[in-house]
Image (cartoon, rainbow, N blue to C red; front, side, top):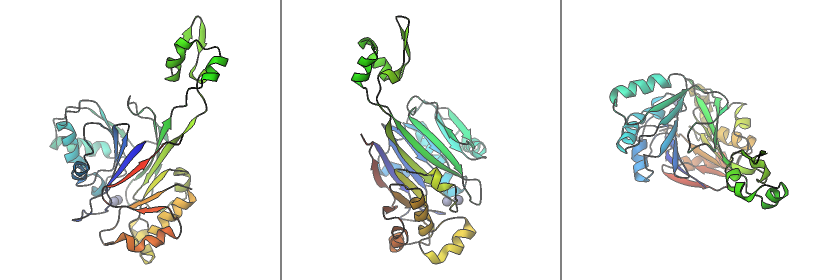
Length: 305
Ligand SMILES: [Zn+2]
Ligand SMILES: [Zn+2]
């Protein structure tokens, strides 16, 4: 199971009742953060998210509403007595930003590994996140911006019949199940000799801030959850969306439909959008399974068996 908390659903500036962009993912007790707007750590504190086990922070772009919370957060992670490496992924310029933050918070008890401007699919070399595959997509915003998709792989089930049919000695079953290749009595044994069919994992996609692109539906294809920016609720604000390189509810819903996702979560609302629910129908008329984001909204995604 994967637990998610939308820590903040605001764009541009924080409001008294709306924090800035950030999504928290808890996967088997290890934590991932996507974007870190001002106030992120306060929202985390309210939800008791915990700071020590944050292994990965993914930054979409370097606008303040997505990164200003990093200064306090990195310091708080340090105070949580974390000593293991932390990985931060971001667009071109992320290294410079982290170096600048290090001037303000020079004494951190952990190392920061920075992955600047990654392309395509990759995995993080971290013993806790070895089942996680990350993909990135170049978006269209007023600065370089990255879309993320996270695929949590699921191990295949042990298949007793297969193990017996392949004459695998019982003493090797457990090791093979954990994915190791073994040479035993001069015979090579591989995990596929005891494992059943692949099981479907969980895919979470995160797209903000951008115009809708023709490359997005394929990138978010079949996501269990598609988190998408929806700066403007009213269709009449489309010219603003085009000018400021953002999206309307309708545009976000259209991407969800084209990408055949399971659930759409709208976020990154304009400060001028006081009541996002008022415009919900602009999204649900296109994609029914739409959730309007709220600060500290919790979602759970389960692996199917
Ligand atoms: Zn933004
Ligand atoms: Zn932006």
